[in-house]
Image (cartoon, helix red, strand yellow):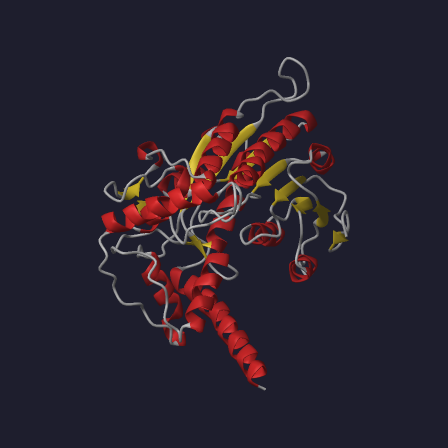
Amino acid sequence: MPGEAAGAAAPNRAGWTCVVTGAGGFLGQRIVQLLLEKEEELLELRVLDKVFRPEILQNFARSRSHAKVTVLLGDVLDQEFLLRACQGVTLVIHSACVVDPFGYTPAEVIMDVNVKGTQLLLETCVQTGVPFFIYTSTLEVMGPNSYRQPAYNVQEDQAPESTCRSPYPLSKRLAEKAVLAADGWALPGGDGGGGALRTCSLRPTFIFGEGSTFLSRSFQRALRRGLLLDRMNWVEAQANPVYVGNVAWAHVLAARALRDPERAPRLGGQFFFVADDTPHMSYTNLNFELGQALGFRKPPRRFIPLPVLYCLALLLELVSFLLRPLVRFVPAFDRHLLTLTNTTFTFSYKKAQKDFGYRPLFSWEDAKSRTTQWIRSLVEEHRQSERMGSQ
C-alpha cells in the first residue's frame, strides 16, 4: 500500500533519508536491496514506482535493516506526488525511465518520462532542499554512431557523444545533460545559505543478470526453437557487459561519496562509466556463456553483409513512417540496433574507482552462476508449461 512501511522502525538517531525512483525495476530493486544491506546510517528509504510486483515488496520487507521502507506508488510526471516524496530527503537516486532501444514505445512517451520526468525531479529537489542527486544513465548517450567507429577501453575524457536521434538514446542524453547542468543550483536558504545541489551521473554498459527483460526474451525465444539462441550480431564486435549487482553497488558507493564533503567535489557535475570484470564479448557470445551449461546452442553465422542489412533497415524505417497515420508498425530491427550490436564499444571504470572507490562487488564467475541459475528457472517453467499443455 502507498506509504506502508516495511521492516522495523528506524531508531531515533542521526542518519540520512533516500528516495529511489524506478525501485520496482530490474536495477532499481537491486539498488534498494544493497542500500538496506550496506548502509547502517540509513534511516528511511522511500521506494518509488508506478507498480511493484508482490515478490519485490516481500524482499524489501525481509530486509534486516533498521531503516524504514516507505512504498510510494506514483508517476515521475506528477509534480505534487514528487513534492510529497522528496520532503526531508537527503539524496535521490533516479533510475526510473522507459528503456526501449527497439522502438515499441511511442516516442512522445519516452521523451515525457525520461526527459520531462527528470527535469521535474530536479526542480523538486531544489524546492524541497534535497542536496544530492544521482542519475542512472546509459552507454547509449555516447553511441555508437557507426560500426566503423569502434571504441576500446575508453575513459571519460575520451568519451564520444551520440548523434543518434532515436527516442531512447536521445532522451537519455538530454536527461543526463539536464542532471549535470543542475550541479551547483542554489537550494533554499537565501544567498546560497541553503547550500547547493550536487549531481552526478553513472553510465553503465550493457546490464545483464537475473530478471533482465532482454535476456528473458532471448532465452524464451531459444526455448521455442529447441535451445537455439538468436544471433544478436553479424560481426564479432566486443560488448562490455556489466552485472546488475555491480551497477547497483556503484550507486551505493556514489551515494556515500556525494555525502562526504571531501569527496563530493570530485563527483559534482561529472559522469562515470560503470563496468566490471566480465570479459568483453559479443552479445551473442554472452548469451551462449550464460546458457551453454543448460544446453543452449550458439546460432550459425550469417553471411548477409552489414551494408545490405542497413539498407533493409532503412527501408523498414521508411515503411514504418509511411504507415504511422494508419497503423503502428515496429520493424524487427533498425539502423540504431544494428549499430549497437555490431560495434566494439568498451569502457574503463578507473575514474569511478579513483573518485568514489568503486570495485565490483560480484566476480564474473559469481555473476555468471547467479544468472545461469535464473535461466535454469526459465527452462523449468517452460518445460512445466509444455507438460501441462500436453495433458
